[in-house]
Length: 104
Image (cartoon, rainbow, N blue to C red; front, side, top):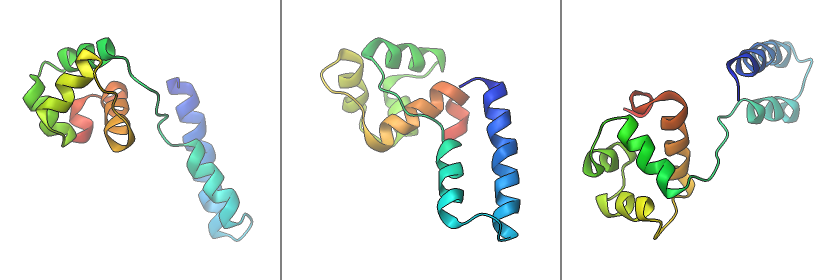
């Protein structure tokens, strides 16, 4: 998602919050706006995970600590033996978009 798109969604979301507080839009519509503003989560290939870790200049054990997973998990992701999912995949996508400091 581009910075322009994120900015537009943030503005629309702020407007929706005001409309919700004023009673103009309901909870369901507000939930839809909230969902639109979430950071998208996409699968990551082993080489992407390795490149991401190397971009952040950390070892596998340190990367694992940031993600709150075992070092073995990071190693298996990078070798393609397993794929990250759930909260781990969400954190990886956040690190990809905003850097490791975003989850520190």
